[in-house]
Length: 375
Image 1 (cartoon, rainbow, N blue to C red):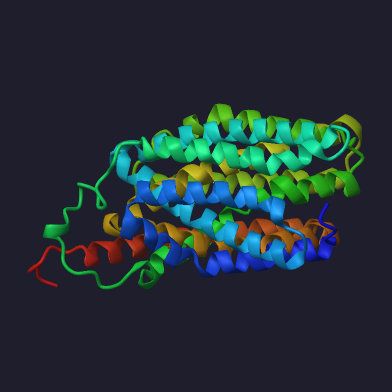
Image 2 (image 1 turned 45 degrees about the vertical axis):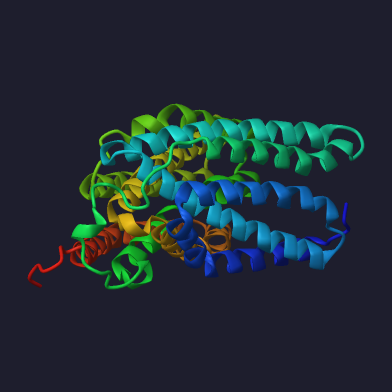
């Protein structure tokens, strides 16, 4: 409607993504400075105003400005929201609660996609133009509900500030945590397989009907809603979180091995194998998410929840930002060797995440040594 080219849209998304990564940690600190709930509510209100401002976009410059500001505010909101969720629930319930949140959010994604699809299918542009206003209204309601949530202490009660020594440094000094986040970013590239590589592979390299794509995404949504809570059961500490990560990595690799053979299969065999490959990568998503929640919960300094959320976003972003281009090239141009290389990268990340998490654990224990304790 504005008249932007696909290249301009892509450039805008790239610039906004780079800015979001660069500002992830400073924006995360806002939750520590002003309180997680207050920051979450304020950024939700800002998001509502920014969505309404989409109606003012009239060219590339205003599009880029709106997108950069919106992505930055979204980053601050996400860090504050996640910090609040870690503070408001006791340790043994954090991963379980986040699994329920994820399941509910997938329902929201589905309803949002349905409404957007109806708007696109309607004649004319009236309903499409109304979408930003509808999003703004939803975010206004969200801000109202966030304000009504119970307040929490800035630092969780399990780590009283008076008993702890001065910080050695912030989240960026915790190299083990950053390495863990990077490895988790690599393991989280199952989304690239799920949303980009397998659909492209199905269309270009197999004889499966294109309508199968709808069934694949439908299955993924249903499984994510129904099984995310079950996949998170028993994830309560670093050891069980790492176990969940290994399970997710195993399913990721299995998906690669299943899908790569569909280049040579025919008919219903292809359909069945592609579907199974998509189900296994959905399993990778469920276990990887549960493991990531557990690791971030256990390895974040309670006094710097927001900053650690920002550092996690930075590390995870760097761990996965290269994957869409790399995986697409490897699978579509190299075929079987490319799929095996993707699987190898996942295995390496699954191996490396354990020592990284243990290093983060040691760093956190050292930075939180009681005052006067021997070094």
